[in-house]
Structures are given as C-alpha cells and as structure tokens.
Figure 1 (spheres, one colour):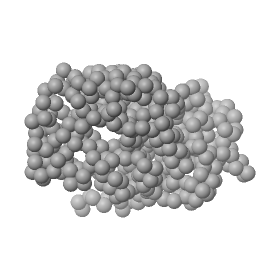
Figure 2 (tube, helix red, strand yellow):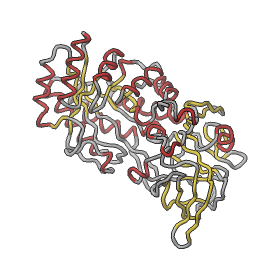
Figure 3 (cartoon, rainbow, N blue to C red):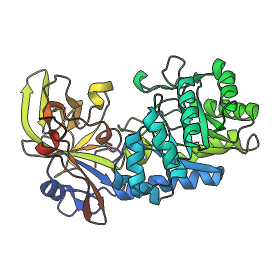
Figure 4 (tube, rainbow, N blue to C red):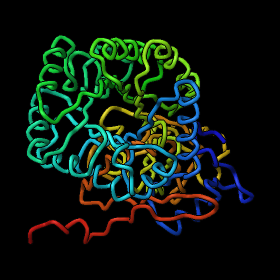
Length: 421
C-alpha cells in the first residue's frame, strides 16, 4: 500500500479493497455512511501494551495515563482502561466521560490551567488520584474547596520548564512564553504555599513540553529538571506529560517507544525512586484512526490546482485550518494504486481554508470514490464542531471482522436540542 502509518491490521483484501480490523472499508462506508471516523481496536491495544511493556521493563514504577483530549469517547476509554491505563483529563466533561467508562478514579490526573470551582468539586468528589495545579489562583481554589468538603487532595505542580521542542508554535507548551505552568523562579513560593494548606499534599511535579515531538532530547532535559526538583523538594512523583509524535508522512520518523523508555529510565535509575507518570495521547490513538470521505465534486483549474471536494472537512478535522497539519490518503477501492496525480482535498464548508490535504498525491479518482485519510485517530473527533450546522460523523470501532458504533452520527434534531425555541 502507498499510504504511511495505516492501522496495524490494514491490508488489501481479496477484492482489492482496503480492509481494517477484518472489515472491508467500502462495506463499512455503505453501512454507516460518510464522512466516518474509523478506529482499529487492535492498534489501540497494541500501542497501550507497547508503552506498558517498555516503561515497566526499564522503570517499573511507571503509571501510564491516556491524554483524553486526543480522543474522548466512552467506548474508546473502556478499551484503554481495560489495558491498565489511567486517564489525563482537563475538563469536567472529560472526567464525566472516563468515569462513565468505569475508569479507576485513583488513576486519573485532573489537568487544566483554569478549572472552574464546579470542576474542582467534581474532581474531589470523584476521588481523582491527582490534581495538576497550574497556578496560584487554582491552588487557592483547590485549597478552599478541599477544606470545605473535608477531603485530602494530592497534587502535582505543573512547572514551566523553559524547554522548546521543535514543533508548531501553537502546540509548544514548555517554552517560557506560555500560558501553562509555574515559572521556575516562582516555584519555591508556590511550594511553600502548598505546604501551608490544610488539605493539600504535594506529591510531585509535572511538565509538558509540547505535542507531535520527534526529538527525544527535549524529554531528556525535562526528565533531568524534574529529577532535580524531586530531590530538592523531597517529593515522590514526577510526570513528563506526553507529546511523542507520529509519522503522518513517509518522510517523518517518530521515536521508537522502547528506545524512548530506555533513554528516560537512564535519567531516573539511580537518581530517584519517584513514581513516573507518562501521558501519551496521539501516539496511542493517532495511527489507529482513519477517516472515510466520499468525493462529491472535482474542480480542476488547469495549471493551478485540482480539487477533490469531499463530504466532510474542517468541522470533522480542523487541524489543517488551525496549523496546516499534513496527512496522506489512498482510495479505499484500490489502495495499492500508484499516486500519479497531485491533488488537493477540499471540504464542503464555507471557508477557503477548508482543506484536508493540500497538494498531496492520489491515483486518478472520480466522483463517488471513497478516500481514506490516515492517522486521524487523534484530535479529529475531539476537536470536531457543527460549523455550518453540519452534524458530526459517527465513530465506529473495527475488530475481528465486526464494526460497532462508538459514537452515533448526529441528526438535525441533535443540532437544535439545546436551542431555546
């Protein structure tokens, strides 16, 4: 096949069609319609197992928690929880979702740089294992709420490590100019404030340096910093956050998870016995997902650009219009065909920037053909909207030749369910 990083079960079946999870994608599209989010359960489980095996081999005292923002749906969370993962949530809605999936609350880390008082109370009452405190204002709110409820709360303080990873500026979170984390020169004051509270226990420190990162070195620098803070303040836990990237294109090379684990463990073993938290998101579900679109029109502008217009776009995948994200695609009915044409896949929405792929490659295609866009498992469904009042697609999970609906396709009635008529 000519598309990089499809789900692990992807293959060309006897009919010459693309198959994932034992299911012919043409048949899946016919049954569930398009656009359609597809998740391969086997790939999700394999990625979870790779992380657990790798990190617990080299640093046994590791807790893996899934970054829910990458893909938050009850059915997906159930699969991830069954593999022994906890969850990183950053809102009351994400907390509500993973609790519906029967997640262990003690293995939940509640993030967010501006949690509401309501969300703080919801987290405390749910018994989440760790609150990640981002600033002094949240610390005050958490202290007062925990006292009012009479509950002890363990916290990780999120620090701003001042480490810049080579990624898009919108997803760099560890640099000094960031809305996230306590600056290092203010940390001692915040730690002292924590220790003066009645109900808050400082378990350790957290940092997150960004997203879609291919270079391991920034993580090494982050680990060294967190170990030094752990030793300085006598804490027992540290969290490296997430951020490992995936190859959306053949030219990209993501870190090997086992090698990544070995490198991180080398910075911890012999220097600390602290519990390590890691929060992968994209690298768990990104490769597992594809999106199916039907071509509805073709606009060929000689000498300029050929557009394949599909039945989805920026409302089901806003990543191109947000930060020019890149993808590859193939045709579901002939995934092995040579990609001889330069095309741009345009969406159906009323924005000129509504593109899925700009100047990509595909075989010759016609109206009605089914396009498969790879690596859409992360930050597609979770960032979807109802722009132009278009209902959001269904999400189906494939495994063992069976397709099950994880999220139903929205109806027009759902669009106005909260309108005050």
